[in-house]
Length: 452
Image 1: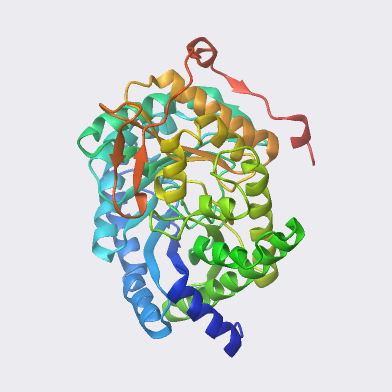
Image 2: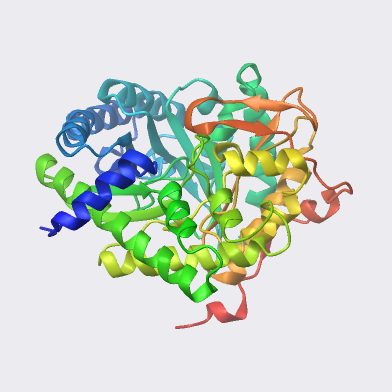
């Protein structure tokens, strides 16, 4: 069991009280491989029964830990085996989508991730049918999240899947037009997706994971910003060291909560994901951390360098605090979920092109970005292709979670509420990439992938 000193406890309590420190999520990963059936109703029933049985006490346990330790635990979530693997034997994925959504409601979790497919090198007919079901699945469920991995450094980029996902995103937006295209906020396209990510919308329970596991995601942008306020004007070495020390303390708290939840639920502890995931609340912004380093506004020249320093220092501090840091662990830059990012996007300082550059050094990618509803599917596929190339070439996880907001244009906003915040509609560069996207096939893996 992790030992926490009295000084660390006092520091942590101050961070919680004054600096927005929280455990963003306790996520239970559940394997569904033993639920496979050639009868979809029977398979979906097995899925519902297993998820509700294993996660029956997840929310109550999180709430008890929160009350006893005084540590806010914002979300309790579930991730499952990619459903495309479970539904392939019967071919009716929507049965599983509805069963999982009912299970999420029955257990009280806010989101359930894993309506997912892994198609980086190509897809089976079952995969293709599964992906076709995503718009309806997200439009007819409340808590279900979906992801599709279309690229890896080892396999290259499946451009057929990239083209397909541009269409799927458009159709998902149209199917949820009455809520501003909210279905797209629950859908992410990945390169190099990780199997133990506890954050939504991209969480799923990988095939190499245990039967059931507890992963915890910790977040504290406000804590980091407050720490940097005390070293104003100091050299970057001091900045990096300050962030490392702060990340160390945050991770220690996260591991304590993870181990306690694991013990009480009788489920193995997996990883702590130390990701600076912002919220729209004042004082809980990654953009404001970058501005505290000396940038007038997020998006100006120097922003990518500042983000690179932040991301690296967070990872170093986390690894010092725990032997089981995993998931994505770094800095997230979801536009709609970050008050500083929202302000910078509204002012024009933060553009889609600058965000793409920033994704080269952050922990995810183009996240929670709203674009005009008239943006065509090929353009969305081009945005995905660019981001997948960054992930493939740099051997890192990248992702696209973009919302073509129906009926909205540049200058408008789309309101999602809660942690998902408000997304200003960002302009998209003109010029068609349709002919490029139409080529299809697979962009080959880079030469440095040959490491065996």
